[in-house]
Every structure is written in C-alpha cells, then in structure tokens.
Amino acid sequence: MRNERKALLLSIGYGRGHEAAASALAQEFSERGWKAKVLDLCALAKPRMFRMTQRVYRACVRRMPWAWGIAYAQIDATDWAHMLNLPGIAGSMRRLQELLRVEEPDLVVCTYPLYAYMLDALAERGQLKGIPYAVVVTDALRVNSAWVRARAPLICLPDEGSCAHVQRQYGVSPERLRSTGFPVRAGFKPLETRRPPGERGQGLRVVYAAHARLERVRADVLGMVNAWPEVEVTLLAEERETRLRGMLGDAGGHVRYGGTIGSIAEDLRQAHFYIGKAGAATVFECYATQTPVLVNYVLPGQEEGNQQLLMQDGAGTYVESTGEMLQTVERLLEHEAAGWQRMVRAMRTAKRGDGAVRTVNALLQRFFP
Image (cartoon, rainbow, N blue to C red):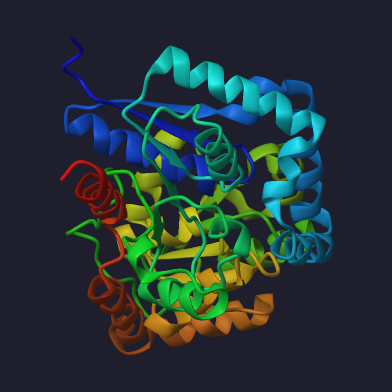
C-alpha cells in the first residue's frame, strides 16, 4: 500500500506563468511530504504541433501583440469543451488517460485551462476514477472565461478582485472559488538589508526585461546609464541577447546579462525596480521580493489585469516612453527615495507573495480535510 500521496501538475510552455505556477506548487507539495510531478501534456502528446503553436505564440507576443489581443478575445468567446474532438486535442486526451493510469495521482492541478475540460470529459465517461482536480488561474482581475467554464470543483485565483469578476461576469458559484494568490517559489522573498538608492541614482539597481521593441530597449537602457552613472542594470534578454550586446556597446560595464532560472530570484531581491512586461509570474515574484514595478509592455487582454492590480495596490505604474520612465524613477528617488519606499510598503501591505502556501492549503482543505 502506497503511503506517499502524489500530485500531478499539468502545465504548458506558453509564456512563463503556467510553468512557474506549477513549479512553485510542486515545491510546496514536496515540502509537505507529497510526491509532485510537473508535466506539459501538450508537449508530450503532440511535440511537433506544440512547437509550432509555441513559435506562433512567441511571434505574436514579440512582434504583434495586437494579434494576440484579438486571439485572446476569441478564446474568451470559445466553448473549449467543443474543442476536445479536434484531432490534436483528442490525442492529448489519450495521453492524459495513460498518464493517470501510470502515475496514479491522488490529485490533479491544472495551471492551463484546457486540461480541466479534458478531465471533465473523462469524469463524464466514468474514466477519472474519482481523482479530484482543480484549476489554478495565472492572470489577475481580467480572467478569461476559458479558465472557469470547465466544471473543476475548485478554482484558485490570484486575488479577491478576480473572484468578484468571475462571480459577476460568468456566474460561477463562490463555493468553487478561492482567492489564494499566484503561486511563487519559496526563493522569492524580500532582502532585509536592501538600502534605498540615492537621489542621483547612487547604488541604483534595476532588473530590465527586454520584451519591448529593440529600439525601445536600447533607448531605455542607455537612458538609465546616461542619467545615473552608478546604475547597474540586469538585462533579461533571452534569445535577443546577442543582438542587444551589439546594440548596447555604449553601456559599458553598467549592464550584465542575467535571467537563468536560478538567478532571477536573487536578481529581483537585489534590485530597486523591475522594468518590463506585466507577465503574471514576474509581477507576483516582484510582490514576493517587494520590488516595485514599472510596466513598459502589456499583452492586450491577458496582462492588463496584472498591471491594473499593481496600480490599485500602489506597487507599480505604467511608463509609456523612455522619457516617462526616466522621469518616474527620478520622482520616486526624490526626498531620500520616499516614493520608492512607499511602493515597497504597498507591496508589503498587499501580502501577495505567499500564493503557493495558500493555494496548497486551499487544495488540501477542499479535497483532503
């Protein structure tokens, strides 16, 4: 007889939010004595098709965010349950059945909505064998209907505003909803000894994610270097690193290239600001490390709620241009960095950094009381 309980976390490699949430939950389950496994079902079942759709998604995110906005609105209007008969998804359904048979999980958690519809279908056919399952939503406030139209008994959301939106917009019963926060790995926590920067940028450290147009990235980074001679910029460039190294030759030793999975937590802990895209994983990692956010890139629909949450809390703001970004930082550094310290306090007060603990608590209370 097996003593160790098993959690199967189903994720997908579109963006970083789905995988980051699943990884954080797996870490928390493991610390509680569970055996936890994260799997990307779509990549396992249809690797070629998945790689193709992944490339399309990344192209939209990088070059045509307006196209992703249109697609996101279409997704919101689509009945995902009807998609299960499509050939590619039907193959993923069969792979899911096989995984459930081999893994024998005690609980399945979906950080991507499609899997919940598959589990609905298996439950209808009597093939789920009573395995409980839940959905963990990975974007705040403006929650797409795809997340909540499946029949998962429990839906965990990033904040109370998201719960209210889902109840009001889609009529979901509050009994199925929990505001648990976005799951963030345990390594993301505030640095107690982080000192405020000086009014002229002395000691200023910035983590900058290069998702905007390359010309904007170059202007932002060189603008910071020229404005604050002591600034240190950690540039998260991913596949754009080679091109940016050539474009930022004038930045000298002020820029270093970071972004490995193991370093992001420490990069944010040391930084005074994160500047970049409003992806859910990064936004909530900034909450966890109490790193104020300046958003310069937002995916229409999907990420607008994350930006809205930051602004509601007083923990971040949107900067339209390089000039606005520089002016905003200068204003926040005035009077012994009073504005920056106010944003840090807002992040501390919001208490949005313990989503993994709260989500696992909700799951265990619901299914294993």
